Image (tube, rainbow, N blue to C red; front, top):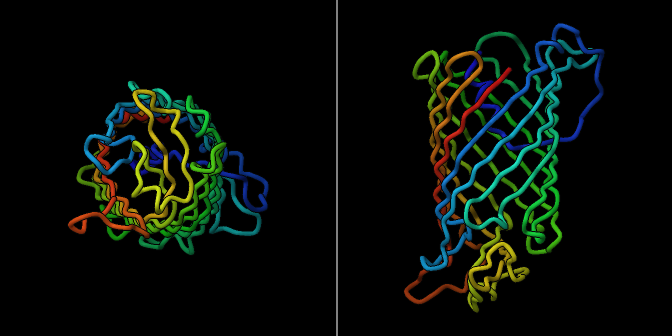
Length: 300
């Protein structure tokens, strides 16, 4: 089993059926009837996405996701295929339970590869949609994403992926109604037959939400605000602001047994508002997040 297939289980993305299908090849359909399970643990250094140290709250979450995928040829083309998958799952936070959620969704991706030669790129277009049900009522809603990507094998050990995406979130509260667009580059390096290291860099421009005690500075640039019902230790306000965000992920995926893998990753996020009144000494109101995750992945 390819490690790349195992790592695909990590995707939390979802989608809508796209394109016109030809009659699916029975053997191809049988091979693509995989069931994917992911159990993960994540430690997050800043679940409030706050700037000031006293306002940064850390927490740990446990998640379980079940997914199933299908693959279909596209009528009249030997070089294209349609991948359709659905998933459902749950994420539970240990301390700030209002952030816990149940989710379900679907994904569709059309892939095109001009030839079977090694090194030929694979181009793709995708649509995704999911439904979130939080213990925080304000966050309940839907997520949508559309984008394009290109993947290429540089050598028998190195794969490179580039992607552009447009993302939309619709929630009960306007604070959590967000829009952004992103550009991402991912590098996979096969260190051994079963182990792959990966590095991802991403840039996003659009809405982010930061939760802090009432702040005059943040209120001056916020597009919307509301008292956050996910944190009950004290009154905190959730602010939606426009920001530039950079994200970096470093990880290692180890496949073992029959269709199983362990995935270890570190993710860093830094968001800086595009409009900032600034603070004394030239300090901005940006925030940083560090996330450490361990996932156990099964494909059968």
